[in-house]
Length: 396
Image 1 (tube, one colour):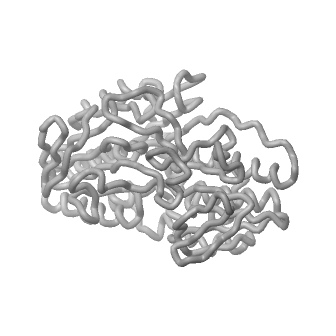
Image 2 (cartoon, rainbow, N blue to C red; image 1 turned 90 degrees about the horizontal axis):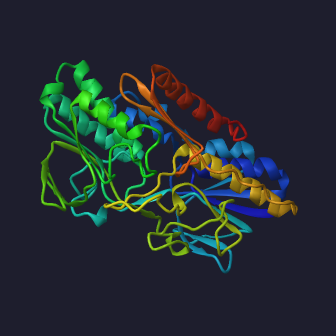
């Protein structure tokens, strides 16, 4: 029986575990390792911040959804990967040998790279974890009670820009609904060279789209900027500019998680081939934010390439099919070019964004605002949570 260990219990980790078990059945002993027993539907965290969702609306208990599929849940954190001996060493000292390893650990949020950044030891809010989002939601409620300036956006070395854009649109829409938008200046600060770049050189007309939407909503953009430090109520940029705030929601630099970083590049992201197999260790696979993807262009302020939930699920299915081929002695599947579909909430509407492949030059690229995109986003939330709860990873 092949021993498959999966690190991470989010989009990629659960999909990979379900798919490997589905494809191999009793030929595979599958374990998922995570220090968090919650699956969180991360795309809905901006809605939680806005007060439109509660934690229980967007979470599932990982151990409960794995058990019916015969997948073991190890409630522990990976501390070290011994690639030569093919084993994972956990924070509690447990050794987990593997024949194949799937790394889907997400990012390490490197708040420490910018003094004063972050919700735990700094002065800024964050939307990338459930606990941080709950804390940010409380700060947002404070703005509604006692208005003041908001700064939203992304610092240098970020590779996920969507939630910051969503919150800018959502906060603008909610403030207008409450007839208090004029009391809250909104600045959008980003390391992107232009609005709508998204770390991928834009998607269709996304540059013009974002510029027009921000102009109509009186959201002030500050692009191609790096943050020097954050002090209470003020962000200082590398060029000396100072931005006051009562709420600052700034995406931090991304790095690889420490446990797996030694397998990766200087930032800890893991090099893989088209089937998401490690370029050196052939029984190790990496998917999602954990992998290294070179940016399409050098930008004045460093930005990373996003790996969305849509992309991560695609990666997980390819990696699982390749592992199944290894175990059964069959030829590995030919991986398709990676594309991306994004449904960006805009408060009272939404935008549908698509690119194939992810990086230019592309076969197709598209950005369009439409109310049906809002309906799609609402429907997808319910669909994906249902799909994960039932372990139906074979569905689209």
